[in-house]
Amino acid sequence: MKHSYTICPHCGCGCGLYIVEQDGAVSGATASQGHGLGQGQLCARGWTCHQLAGSASRLKTPMLGEPGKLSPASWEETVDRAAEMLKAARDKHGAESIGVIGSSRLTIEEAWVLRSLAEDVLNTPHYDSGARLGWVPLGLPNPGRYQDIDEADLIMAVGVDLLEENPILGARVMSRTKPAEDRPYVSPDISHQIPTEPAKLVWVNSRPSDLAAAAAVRIQTKPGREWVFLAALLQKLAPGEACRAKGLDQLKESLARSQLEKLLAGSGAAAKDASRAAAMLAAAARPLLIVGKGLWQQEQAGLARAAVIDLALMTDRMKVMQTALGANDAGCGAIVRSDGGLSYMEMIEAAGSGKLKALVLAGEDPLRALPGSELTAKDLAALEILVVIDSFSSNKAIPLARAVLPMALPMEKAGSFRNIEGADQKFAAAVQAPSGVRGLDDIVSRWAKTLGGKTKEGGQAKLPETRELLPLALPETAGKDPGYILELGTAYPHLQDGELFTEGTPHLSREFAGGWAEMHPDDIAELGLRAGWRARFVTESGKLEALIRPNPGLLRKTIFMPLHFGANALAPFRYHPEMKAPVFRGIETTVEKI
Image 1 (cartoon, rainbow, N blue to C red):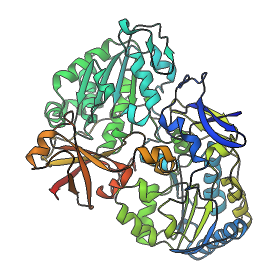
Image 2 (image 1 turned 60 degrees about the horizontal axis):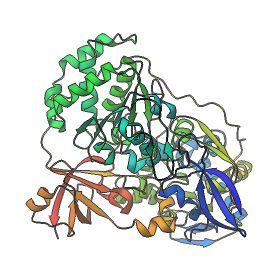
Image 3 (image 1 turned 90 degrees about the vertical axis):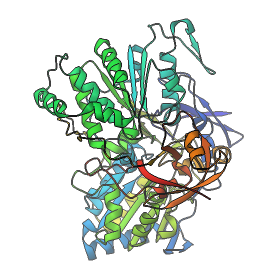
Image 4 (image 1 turned 180 degrees about the vertical axis):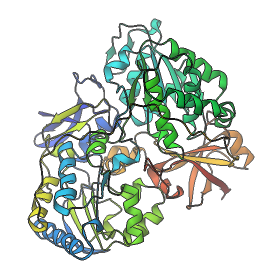
């Protein structure tokens, strides 16, 4: 029996595991006992990730042809023909007519190869990655490490559903906040020996979870309104904190002009809870702030980012940890991003307007990951040339492509992932790729011969850092009552931008299929519906039918729906103008009886 070490290819926790082979067949996965975060634990995604290697949806044969009329071809013919098409587009329309989008599950080494493809081979400034969809490419102050979870006396989880998105990280936070009488906390897999006093937990989010039940302060907001709580913290802390960062006077002035009491009331949060959380933060010696995609995937993402930066700078003892959905969000987000080019969603728009003529997708499926899937399909169909490089035939963009190339899985090659705490974790190939399946570096090096240019070795990618406090241009009111508002999010074990990996795992695909929507029981009754019935959910972007599930923990007039069964069709194609992140929260919705 052979055990080969690798890193879980799903979320940004970066848990270490071993792929098990017996008699030449991949048969299982087992956890690394000595891994810094997992410590012998894996979630269902990790335990079943070995199934990806033998998935029935693996893409093993290159294809060439017209959109919708692809035929099998040799690897050499396909890779050369794809290069010729890209060269023709560049010669006819210019280098800026080409875009490159990569998955956040590429290795760090592949991220550099993809960036070099754009910069040095295609000579285009337009390149981005799927990390953009839920991870902020910004060097946040005082970055937190996994060790800070064990040392913190106060943990604040804001806009993140850890047990759904990053379960092992969430389990560690749960362990850290267990009361003293429950120590040592024994999980199903390992005994967590935590010698320090339990940390207090402040939970701020829209959809309640088991982590919320463990919180000393639980603040529930409407979807996309968590930033109001952060602004309230700043207002209450500003007079007492000895802040050395520039911009304190301007920040105090912007906070003094705001109507935070009204904004808090409009967000669903109680002012007394914000005051209590502020007092706890002021008294904490080692606070840790954990933030996630919920802060960025909404209309006021810029305010959320400014509030996080200001809070970290004002309380310079506070560590900040940004969670990541993609296994290499932190690596790809730092490397495959161009300050002078179009972002992910801007490239899709440019394809629809005719500005972009050719697009390379490396492990990315915009039709699953982006809002407004119908509009996205039309934009992609307008391209003269679409080249898809992927590990799975279930990529929905393949029927729109003119060339399709199979790509090796992370476990089938050597490389490294950058995890949530910013550490690069190296691994070797754990299993052998199917015959004819190549790595991204093989494809790009072959393209360079036809397109000219020479790929460069990877270097250092520095994210822009903000060391000055940012004024908050807060709205004067909470706005009109929109009626029912929809939040599209993660339902374990599915992950946005990782659906191909979930579908490629037979156990997860079989056990966690189907679509549903959660509503408050009183809303269900008010609409003349019942739990277990199907209803039609209508937005400005489209309509979708889903099974109704009651959730008394939701705020009235709010709806939660997982993205994994095509619910992105309900989200209008919108993104924050500065952050470039899609808007999946706070969508006005009508509910109809079928």
